[in-house]
Length: 212
Image (spheres, rainbow, N blue to C red):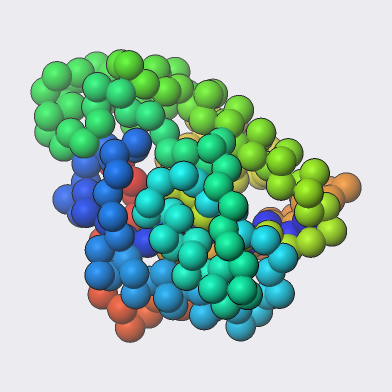
C-alpha cells in the first residue's frame, strides 16, 4: 500500500499555539486554500483509490477537497482522532505552564513519559495509529490511500513507520497540509516527510509545531 499521509489545513490555535486536541476548530480561510492546493498537488502525482480521515471537521474538510478530485467520498476512521489533551484542552501554553509546570516541562523533554491530566499518553496515540494502519492495509494492500490526520497523529504514525521510539516525537514536524509518502509492503519505505512546497505563495502556515 502506498500511504499519502496529510495533516489538515490551518486552524485557529496554531499561532499563537493552544493545545487543540479534541476541540472542534474549523479550517480558516488559509486552511481551506491550503486544502485546495494540497488536493491539486496530490492529484498531479497519484491515482488515489481511497481517502480516509479523522472524524474531526478540520480533517474531514481537508479530506473532502482531496477526494473530490477522484469522485470519492472520504471514509472516517475513529483511530485517526487527535490526541486528547484532557484538562489542557484549548489552553494556551502560558496557562498550562502556570498550572502544571513540571508536567509541562516533561512534555517537551520526555513526552513518552507523560499522561496529560484527564487525557492521552503517546502510547495510546500510537496504538490507535497502528490500528488505523491495519484497517487500511487490510482493505488496500496494493492500492494508493490518502489519510488525513493531525500533527500528533501523523507524528505517532511516522515514528512507528520509521521504527523510531516515541521519545523522538519532537524531532518530526508536520506543517498544516503537508504531505508524507510511505510505501508499506514486505518492507517500509518512507519517500517524503513534511513536504509543503506546494503551499508556497499562500500565507505562511504559522507555527508548524502543534503544541509547542
